[in-house]
Every structure is written in structure tokens, then in C-alpha cells.
Image 1 (cartoon, protein in one colour):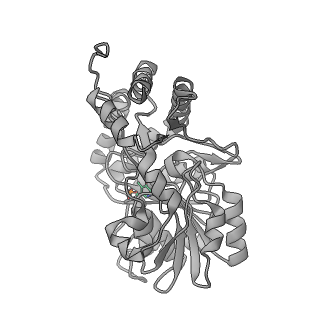
Image 2 (cartoon, protein in one colour; image 1 turned 60 degrees about the vertical axis):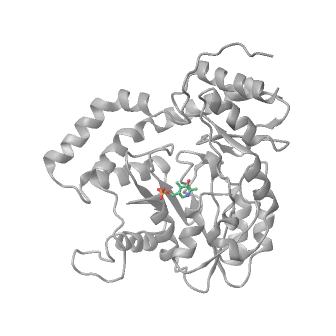
Image 3 (cartoon, protein in one colour; image 1 turned 180 degrees about the horizontal axis):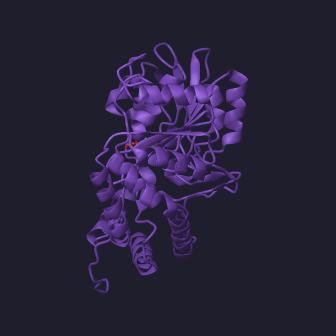
Length: 374
Ligand SMILES: *Cc1c(COP(=O)(O)O)cnc(C)c1O
């Protein structure tokens, strides 16, 4: 039967245009100020942003870096993780999480996820701990914090460092504490699409440990505390001043934006409540999910079909992640199986969401999902 003609609206998966339009005068003023002052590296915006971010998150130290990937690498290096060590993480994440482990010369060891939350299953973590395990990297995927208490208990028992990959969860909470301030390190990304995004690359490490903070500050600047007095072999991993200025404009809005994302998630939940053939994302009672993504599971092998039907109507959706990390070509030699992650890779579909998405757009998306399943 012919479907009624729907006007083709283009629905991007994330629309930053409203935000940019709204903040443009402030952004331009801040960028102009950087140009006028002429300090482009490690100027006052970087220092102030670090102070403001630390205060917002409730943590002692925040060290701004050039990416979330470097945040993971530098945290592992600060903890002394290197060749011969094993680091446990989830196979259902962006490659950078595991890449950082390999980058420092350690071995990534995967523990399967809980398919309800998409996050590390703590029981699987304990199964793969060995005498060589040095750290665990829980990833707060899609904006939902991992159940941290059992992870911390394990870390305590086995003497492991806890590095929180908080790239997708700026402002999320676990039992009243901000994600990224619970373990030994919090690693953040300010990639433009993240909940707090720059307009270029950026990242940050948070920690309550002064020794780690100092080491990371040195590592990001060629291993030096004082310029031209290099004490370690480090990196060039600084956040640039213009991105810091942009982040300072945006940080005061993060609670409002995360709240709007939560509201939008609630709208999808109502619209898609008990739709046969899909599962809505679980929201755990211990935390405050910030919906970096609103990710449904499409059952019965129909995910690609539904995605194509949405695309035909101009609705973008994304599969995060189509190949679990342990099956990526670079780790193919591991020949391990992680059934939950593999199943999710075939089912997940992230629908358009963002702080400014309109209810009418969500209605169009939800109707289209239901129609496509029909
Ligand atoms: C984005 C992301 C990263 C990497 O951050 P970059 O700033 O892009 O380097 C790491 N882990 C996860 C889970 C991410 O989503």
C-alpha cells in the first residue's frame, strides 16, 4: 500500500547550527580577545578553563590536552602502565580506548558488556584479571556512567588503577558524583560532537592525585615543568588557546544542554514505548545519564533495513559501533569472542538527539521508526 506522502525534512544526527547561532556573538568576542592578546599556547584561557572545569566537576586537578585519545595515553603513562602490562576494557567502545592501551605498549584485554547498559560487565572484568593486570578502563558509553562501586572494589582488591573514559559523559553523574572524578583518572574529549565540544580537537584529564597531575602536565609539554628544561620524554599535547576560549563560553551551558538531552530522551521513550521489535536504552537508577546518544536496539536482524528506511526519509542515524573493538583488523589476531558486544554491534542504532532537537522532529523520527518496523 502507498504510504502517505511525507515532506522530506533533512534530520541530521546532531545539529550544532542552533547552538552556534545562539552563541556566535560571545564566541567571536572570545576568539577576538585571543587574537588581540596574541597568546595562542598555554595562555589564560587554558588555565581558566582548567580551573572552571575542575570546579564544575568537583575535582582537584584538570589538565587540558589536545584530544581525548591523548588523555587516555597520558593517564596510562602517568600510572606507569607500559610493556608487559595488561589493561582491561570494553570491546564495545570507540577504538581510541583500546588504541591508547596499545599505544603505551601494554596489552588490551577485553571483558564483555552488559547488553542492557552497553557498559562493562563487572563480573566479566574479574574473570580476566591476571597478575599482569595494571588498570581497568570503564567507558561511560553514550553518556551513561558505568556502575563504578563494584569496579572500585575490584580495583582495590587487585591493586588496579581506574581510568574512566568519560569522552561521552561530560556532566553525567554516579550517585551524586560527576563522571570522571570517581576513579584515579577521568579522561575527557572535546571533539565537536561530544556533549561539551570544542570547534576542533581537545581533551582533558582530571585527577585528585597531585603527583599524577604534575606528571601529566609535564608529559603534555615535552616532559618539562620549565620551558627548555626537559626532564622526561613527553609529547606535544596541549589544548590550544582558541579552543579553550570556546570551551569557556560553552561550559556554563552544559547543565542546561544535558538536561535538554535528558528531556529529549524522555520524549523518545514516550513515543516509542513498547514498540515491538526494538529495545529502548536502559537508564540505571544510580546515575544521571546525559544521552550523548539515544541508542535503540533493533531486533530480529532488521537494523540495517530500518536504518535504510529512515535514510530514505532524510533521517540520519548512526551505528556506534558496527565492529566491536576485538574484531577490528588491528586486533583480529586475538581471535577472541565477546558475544554480547558482537550481538549489540548488529542491533544498535543511534537516533538523532542533541540539546536543541525539536519535539516535532522527534515525532517524525519516532513515527518513521514505527512505520519502518510495521
Ligand atoms: C571520542 C572518544 C574518544 C577519543 O576522543 P578524541 O578527542 O576524538 O581523541 C575516546 N573514547 C571514546 C569512548 C570516545 O567517544
